Image (tube, rainbow, N blue to C red):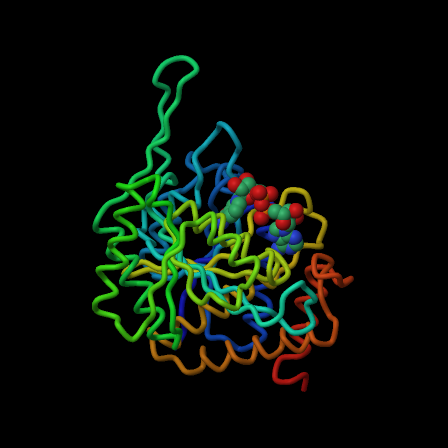
Length: 343
Ligand code: NAI
């Protein structure tokens, strides 16, 4: 069985980390075939007239699977986020971002093991903004019952399937009584059907403080779109940063795997970016193939890559963001050399 995966290298550090990730996945023997498609600035550079070409969307719809590098979004003007457009167009409503301490990576915390689950299609991220009059603008926060219900069900199902015990909803329903109120109430109502999982709730500002003070007290963090965005980076900071935080965006029929980090223009083109977050996203993709298409080879390859990068980190083979001295390619080589226990 071979799986066709749409590879979207993205821009900035995207092509560098995508190439390194692809090399490791191939070296593991993962049964993948690649179809490369552009998005964002790369799409414009290649002569497409849209940052999200229809051919890219169609390829994901056809194969149901993509591994995506980051895409730059201009600040305060210019085109809208390709990443948001992709998630909305394909209704990839559930983002899963595991955050774990790694042996060999020194941080202020040990034994962090969290998962951020982010609603991916609405909230302030809907990007509905207008200028009411000169000097007055508004940005609309959207919440729908359907989206709140489905992300709640998704979070509880994820908890069950991954053997996790607790979901904490982070909200600001004391102020945004309607939108965050709907999000919170949806989680509470859904919890009726998932009594084996503990549901907790925190007002997000106090929740942030408590997560920084004691991440071990949390398990799954359920967030609407913007809170999930911010919380993902906050949690990344607990375990070594954006270089080690992977992610997956799931819809009913399609899944797009991408790291939490962006295109990192400050280090793009220098060959120093950490490819591990995207590689970990690739491991999530292999586990997804194992789970949904019953392909045990994918499961074995996922395990072998995970063992290899854990060994590399324990032995001090790491990129500059983690305090090491390896570049992007050298780190990928270090992982490849340790596949199968370094045979
Ligand atoms: P960023 O995540 O690109 O970078 C933040 C900091 O982390 C930078 O100092 C960067 O060098 C470092 N960093 C990020 N990834 C790294 C890696 N793999 N290895 C080593 N260091 C790494 O966030 P920033 O600078 O706020 O955004 C840059 C651009 O990326 C923006 O245009 C933003 O819209 C876009 N972006 C795209 C995302 C996506 O495609 N899913 C997600 C987040 C941001």
